[in-house]
Image (cartoon, rainbow over all chains, first blue to last red; front, side):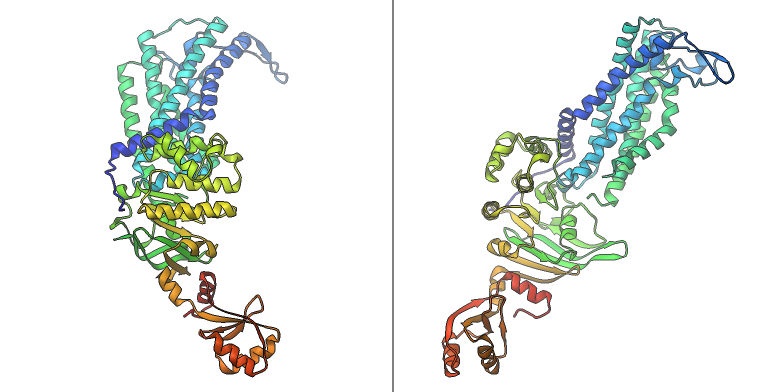
Length: 270
Length: 300
């Protein structure tokens, strides 16, 4: 009895691997933990900065007094208005500009690296790559599922910010932007995720079984692009920012995807 | 048609040449016993067939098509080194993932059938990391069997299996081969391999040194008469005077190779005052054939 071979086009292959990755993500406790962290972190930040707001600390050596300054309104945790909209031309390195949604992109690096490297660590990559000669399926699927996971984390952070704002009774006022701008800003931040995911994916396929290496590379390389988040998705964002983030994401996903594909083709998968 | 046809396959790991122009022909529907010492290039060859590592040279055809053909590759089942399972997932979820990977319709029924086949139906809810070595091996085989593969590549599939597990494995592999699938199985347990293999390939130092069918192996294996006597040294001295290939085996029997007439030996020894307690004709098995070949004795 001779075996027959069915047509196995790109769509069929992509559908099957997307199903694998979606199932893996949906039953992975780590994904839910990361989303949970994304939800809790803004609440903790807002509560703690509210508690510290207005407190005066004295330097024991110089005697200099410093007044602790927290968030003035909730949306500051999602970013700031663009520098062109204000007179401010320098970036503040205070708690407001550091402890915000942008640090979530580093948490996405951890999730993507663990998710991808686990394929190689467990040996499941053998099953995946034996039945699919084209590595593109893998790269596309991981970019899509990684981006969805990252977007969930960003949205969880936004939700956590609103809850945190409610708990701390912080103002929801919009200074220098309106609701439309805010929605555009959140969409832009969500659309930036694939840029980072495609970079983290490339670093993960370089690291393969070595999750620590993939994480170090991801955080290192991701740091270079960290600044673009606030520029590309300010609180006073508009449609242009969304288009810019969309185009950037598509470009990065294609470019870094091609690099990941090349790495997978040229290196040993076990 | 051949399921696998490899010509002049080469693979280097840095300065080490793992495969030095390996040729391999595996007919469709065969159970191909792939034998060789550790580091001889078996696993490297199997990984290249499965597309897990890339060769430096040579050609590989699967069912007459390039080994990178997506349609053929979708019908390969694999168990190389260890089963590729996520340790924190249940056995069922691991199999479910593989079923998704292979786009199997009605996957629940297929998984239940495969689990029953490898006698693991009771362990479906267990976490993979909590399974014993033998159970893990069975799960790996179950994963390889999902999706009715045309080609199965199994590297040491009976490692860690108990006697009953080995028997089940033999039966499963024979049944799969009967359904038209081709199986490449490498194992160091040659006695087990001998019971199922229809073809053999013996690899050494990255080169195929012998390829044959089970019938050819049977014909190639040296026949001998095994003699059990009380006075071993005395009998051996006399036998060596008349026959050229005489040696003592591990059990203390004297083997007279290439001699199929036990009556003649009994008569000869009787004439020299040696009483024969036990005598039988036999031939060397795959294991001895392989060892002879490796030691350069030449088994023919």
